[in-house]
Image 1 (tube, rainbow, N blue to C red):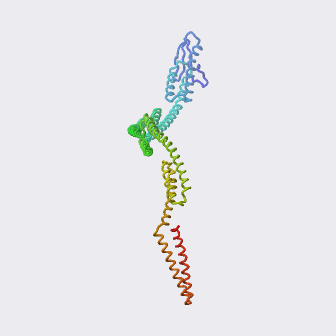
Image 2 (image 1 turned 90 degrees about the vertical axis):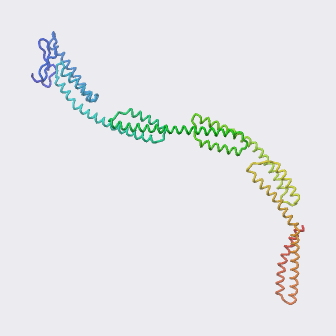
Image 3 (image 1 turned 120 degrees about the horizontal axis):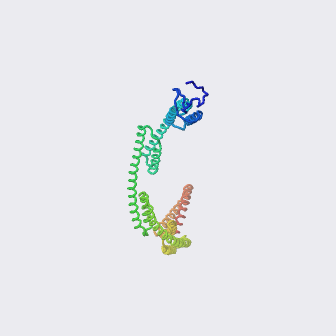
Length: 417
C-alpha cells in the first residue's frame, strides 16, 4: 500500500474492481466495503465516499459538542466509543484512520472536563454540606426555643429546602439528617407539651371567668354604689389575672362580663346624676342661708338675739340634705365660725356678769386706793421733816399705783356696763 499525502481526498483511499467491488485502504491493508454492479467505478466509489463524509460530519459534530461542554464526560466517552466502533466497522471510503485519530484526540479534553466536573461537584458537595450544617444548627436552636408558631413554619421550610438539596457522602449526610430529625422531634414534643399546658390554663381561665361572671350578675342590681364599684374593680383585677380562655369563647365571655359591668355603672351614673342635681340645689340653699346669717349675726352685739338667730339658722340649714363632697369642708367651716362667734359673745357676757370676778375687781380698786392714801401720808410726813428724797420716792410709787388703779377701774367698769 502506498502512503497517502496530506492533501489526499476521501476517494484516494479507495478503488473499484471491474466487478463493482469497492475497497478502502487502511493501515492494515485493503478491505472490501461493498459491491455496486452495473455502475461506473466513479459512481460506485462516490457512494461509499458519501458514507465516509457522513461519518466525518458526525465526528465534527461530536468534537463541537464536547468542546462546547454540551455533553457530560461520561456521555462524551460513550458517544466517542460509539462513533469509534462505527468508524472501525464503517463500509465507507475515506481516511478512516484520520477519523479514528480525531476521536482519540478528544480523550484529553474529556479527561480535563471530567476533572473539572469532579472539582465542581466536590465544591458543590462542600457547599451543600455547609448549607446542611447551617440548617442543622438553626434547627437545633429552634428546638430549644419557644417560638411555637414561627418555629413550626420554619421547620417546614427547612425540611422542604433539605429535600431539594443533593445528597453528599452517605455517612456525613446520614449524620446531619439524624441531627436535623432529632431537633425537629425535640421541638415537636416540646411544642405539644406547651400547647397541652396552654390548653389546661385556658380551661382554668374559662372556669375562673365564668365564676367571675356569676359573681358579677349578683352585683348587677346593687345600689350600694361605692362598695359595689369597688367589688367590680376587684372582679376586673381577677379577670386580668385569670389569663386567656380558649379563643372561641374568650371574646364571648368578655362581652358578657362587660355588659353586666356597664349596666351597673350606667345605673350608677344615672342615679348620681340625679343626686348631683339635688346636691347642687342643697348647696345653693345653704350658701344663701350662710350669707344671710353672716350678714345679720356677726358681730354678735345682742347675745339673746344672736342665740335665737343662730338656732333659727341651724333649723333651716339642717332641713337641706347633702351637698357635693368637695363643698362639705367649706360649709362646715363657715357654720363653725358662726357658732364660734355666738360662743365668744356668751363667754364675754359671762365674764362681765361673774360676781366673783366683780368682787375681785372691786377689792383690787379698794386696795390700790388704800395704798395710794398711805403713800400720800408718807409724802406729807417726809416733807414735814424735810426728807425730799423719801417724798420723791413715794411720789414715784403713787404714779405706779395710779396706773394700776386706772386699769383696775376699767376692768370694774366692764362689770358695770
